[in-house]
Image 1: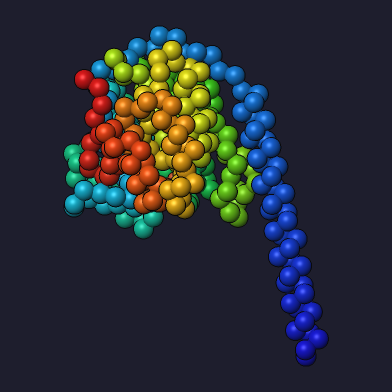
Image 2: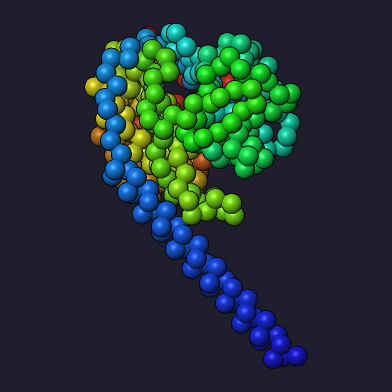
Amino acid sequence: MKRVFLLVNALLALVVIVGGSMLWLRHNQAVAQVDQAWANTTVQPLGDIGSTRSLTILPLIERNTEPGLSGEPGVSYLVTTDSATILFDVGYNADGSAPLRRNMDALDVGLESVDALVISHLHLDHVGGWQPMIQHTFNLGGEPVDLADMPIYTPVDMTYPGSTPTTASQPTVIAPGVATSGSIAFPELFPIVLFGDPNYEQSLLIQVEGYGIVAISGCGHPTLQKILTRADALFEQPVVGIVGGLHYPNSDGKDIQPNIAYLEGYNPQIVGLSPHDSSPAAIQAFRNAFPDVYRDVAVGQAITFGA
Ligand SMILES: [Fe+2]
């Protein structure tokens, strides 16, 4: 009996060691692929794509909320410029109760006012849940909505019933002064189905007249440095800020000081860290570093910039 017990334990240990090593190898392979993809990617400056005088970012889904609205660890932001309204991600819908639709109703945001939809990346907290993620689609929750007339920009190939989303691998101008960053690779850490293969994320880049470029990020998996480096490559105007996720979920605030120092190099005029993938310590560190320009990111609290 004792011998059987020892044998089972030895087998289990072997499975753990071999399985762990395989995952570690796959992850390292993905890191190498991501590094190579970044080194091999060149983008052309966008030239004059216009600008907006005003920029408003209204979180429709976030972890933190104004009273009376629904929060969850996901992202959906309504981005409004002088000439366009863009829905950036569609939240998590973690409990299936369609919090995005509920918050839209409460905030009087109608889909008819949205000119374009941009998905930052194919993760469940940005595409409306696990099921849409594994099916490479997205879902706003609640009753299905017809988006046939709405341009949709995704970072990888995705589908939506009745629509043909554009895979915006390359930076793409979607409105005056508004462009996608193009897909930037990152090593996938999501377990089970995707672990090991690189994934791709895009940000929104918005040229604000009289200021410069504001980046809007979903999770920020590619890293702050790559997002801002991409913005530098695409625009003549300087980057003046970033709002959204930068993926510091377990940060103690000290480990991200090099990133804060990097952002300080841009002398930003607007900074807001998404609570959906940032620890309270990370948010406090950013708030401390940029006290005059820091913005809270919470459902129902509009962040305005520019004129
Ligand atoms: Fe996220």
